Image 1 (tube, chains in turn orange, yellow):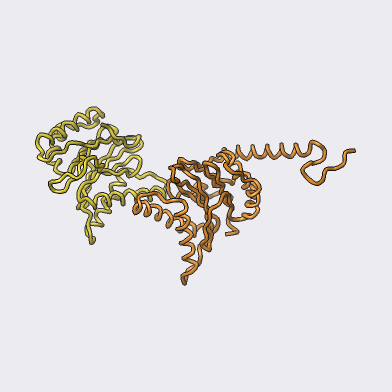
Image 2: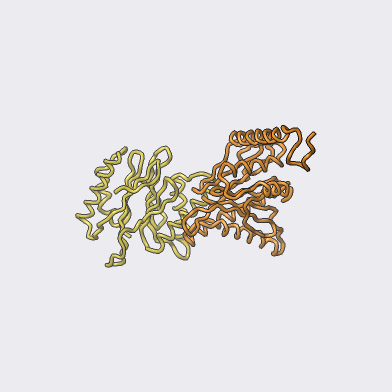
Length: 236
Length: 192
């Protein structure tokens, strides 16, 4: 799992965003068939880090469970329910004989209707041991700790959609060497629809981030001594 | 659970289902919707054994949803019809066969309408106009006489009205209210 490509999830006020690092596609490979962000149901989707084949099996089980839940309970799954289910499956395979644990961590995003009928965004993470928990922002896969620290520093309460997207892209850019071409972003808003940002849109956002970074760097250089670092130097 | 009628027009399918739920001589409920939306452009109308019908329809609905989520593709009407027929066939020789007769009405995104008639013996047939239940005995001949290919919505409504009038005159059962839906390339909507 730690060697899998990075995936980031960030929860905002009324939107939740998943960003994944796409493994660089070899020349002959058809890029469309390599999908790392998948729909589990209309209002729930997930990204994973780790062994793709294991993920396929788990995704299939989760999708069937979503529909099965709809059939028996006549209600779509809540994000917590399906996270619990996926975690439960992952745990089962750590306890039976003759099987090995699923080698993936997942980030599950979606919207739930709360008591007042409002749609609330949710982000959950599961890992191979079968633990699941809710997060405000998280990262899995390669360099997850770096990204998580970055997120801890920069996550704010009640972010709007563009800020959430920008934060996701920013955090991925920290660790993705090859730049915005290898980043895939999926945005889910409270109407439940999943939007995949096109490569151009991702590019545009990363350019904005670049500009902001440069502006920051300029500002810090201007007064001659960076005022945010170290003690205030003496004026001569 | 008595009457279903479907008429395929130029780029839509007009469907009508009665809205009563009855057990022998007692009418239990008015305003029952005997259809389930399979996906944006396909509608399954059902009639038959009361528990079986809803159970079967919802089972089909969830399975079609699963297929679409797995494959990212909306299923076309003939694919839906084949799937439903297969499920019917499997249930037929099982412990508890589903006693459900159905119509599947669908329009592709390009607006080509398709209507499938299926029954509890797992028969399935694509038809330009169809009816299930006692209505079939009366209404098929009316539609035989007046249906033409490429009906507009207005003309189809006139034809449907003729069928419903026929039922009112000649059918002993009293069916006061029908739920009429149109399936076309924009989806499914109810019309008065």
